[in-house]
Length: 70
Image (tube, rainbow, N blue to C red):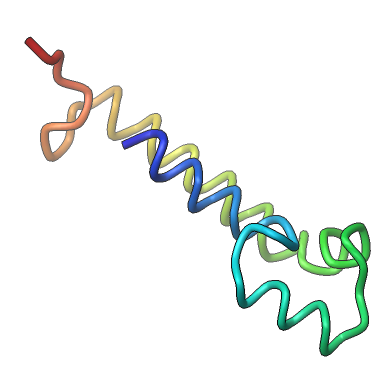
């Protein structure tokens, strides 16, 4: 789970992480740093909330997450 969620969360924060980010940056004329700084007010809170969600699911073993594999 952590690999899939981490990839999804990281993808929204960078220019090359998701195809739609490339389109947004091209239309806006942003480079990598400009994209990151312009989108950070949205992407960073989403990233933090996603990490907190992973931690809470793991800690409280909600929906079977956090259980030990045989």
